[in-house]
Each structure stands twice: as structure tokens, then as C-alpha cells.
Image (cartoon, rainbow, N blue to C red; front, side, top):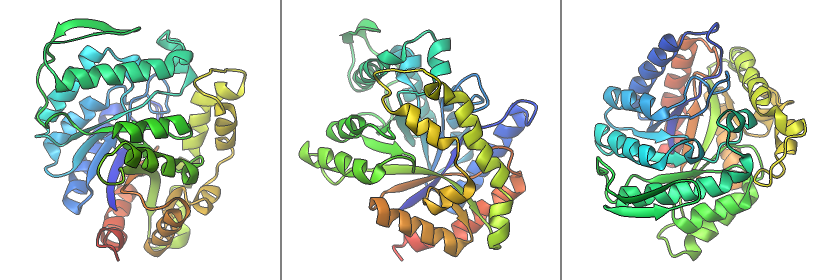
Length: 351
């Protein structure tokens, strides 16, 4: 298993200025690279405190590319529904060049009703926009002088510049959490998968792996799962220090996505009312118990990871939120260092 760091802002301007947040994130990314973490990942969200500081992860990752030398730079994820494929394809290839071919592109459908409403896009078009955008971006990255007439975007005789540094293109990840068809789609297409430890992953990851194999792709696919992580030598402090920021993450998530529980509905988001409703009541203890949060001493975290693997099967990458919310920067830094020293070797060497 490989471990990376994930940057997901979750606060208001009154809590922390953007310049301070991104300076801290870049410091952490640089040190994580030196400590052996294998990726840095950033999100695309808009307008509200849940993720809103990061409307363009490619901008942040371009800066991270200049502060790191080895780790992969990963979007977790960009949203085709909110982007013109001509623009996004060019930005992808540009970051691929800036990073020296260290860029992996994660794509997502988006799921927050307020974002769809403010972009004046129907969530009922989510799947169609996602799949059309993905097809067009792959075409633009892998071929020259291409044409494509879609329902939402069309172009004729276009060669996107710059051309990708990685050939034929950067690796694609597909973000999915609860829809079996999305897991099957990612595996069939030969794309890596990114998810979170919420929902029926035990049943869904085998669907992805089977679709991958049935399509004739070599190997068994590639899965990345994102976790909040806080590591401390003292078991009591490991919970006390990050508790408020951890639980506030789910408060902010419900603030942004709670419309699903208040009558919002879409054919492309079946069951989201139940999923979001459950998250409202998440606590640090319930998530540790469910193995959805890597919080504790090094030995406790190792046990959580092994229990999670027993539950859903082996996976290739853990993407760790280390400075979530307003968590003190020095505490996040110490946690990241301790995890690298005491936890990572037990998995990276197969111990």
C-alpha cells in the first residue's frame, strides 16, 4: 500500500485566510514528499466552506509540483460538468508538463445541489455530462486534429496544446462512492478508482475489479481510498486534539449537501437523501469504530487499516487528510511525521 496526502479546505475566510492555508499546505506537501508519501491530492468545490477554497485543484498542484520532486500530483477530483473540455484538456497537459509527468487526473460527477444550481446545470444531466466530458478530454489528450459533436460541447478539427508529457496521457481516476454502475464503468474502461470509506465499498470494489478483469485489462485495477488521519503517541490526545475539526467536517458537508434530505431529488443521485442524512450524525467515535477514520496511536491506526482491509479487501492507495479544518498546523505536521515513521513502514514493506 502507498500513502499520500490530501488537501481539502473546510472553513470560512474568518477562520483562516487563503494565503495562510495554501502556504501551510505547500509546506506540508514538500515535507510529505521527503518523508515518502507518494501523492498530493486536491479537490474541486465552490462557493461554500465545504471545499470552497479550492475551485481549481490544478492551480494548487502546479504550485506543489515546484515544491516536490517524487510524489504524484492528483486531482481528487475535477468535474467535467462544470468545465469546458477544451479548456480542461489543455490545463491537464500543461500541469503534466510542469510536473515532469507526475500528474494523475481524477474525475468526478459532483454531488452538491448548490453547485449545480449556481452553475445553472441540472443534476439530472450529471452522468451524461460526466461521460461525454471524459470521452472528449481523452480524445483531445490522445489524438490530434479531432472532432466530437456532443450534447453539451462540440468541436471540429482541434489539436489541444500542449500535448501530454506522459504517453498516451496521464492516468485517469474515477471518483465514486455508492453507485454500482460507476464502479463497473471505471473498471471496464481501465481507469483507476478513488472513493471514501462511506457506503457499501465491500460490495462495490469487487464489481470494479471484476469489470477490470472482464475487459481484459492487465492486473486487477487500482483503488485509492481517502481518510481523515491524526496520529499521536497518546491515545487520549489523539482523539481530543482533532475532534472538533473532524466532526465539523461532517457538519459542513451536511450544510452543503443537506438539500438531498429536504426534498431535492435527481434520477442521477438515487439514495443520496439516505446517505447524506446518515452523515449528519457521524462522530469521531462512530467513524473510528467503522474504520473510516485513521485516528489514534500508531498501533491503533495500524489496527484500523488492517481491519478496513479485512472488511473491503486490499487497496493500493490511502489518501490522508492531515490538516483538515482549522487543525493546528504544528499538530498536523507532527501527526504526519509520526505516521510516516511508525505506520507507513508496516504496510509499505508488507510487514
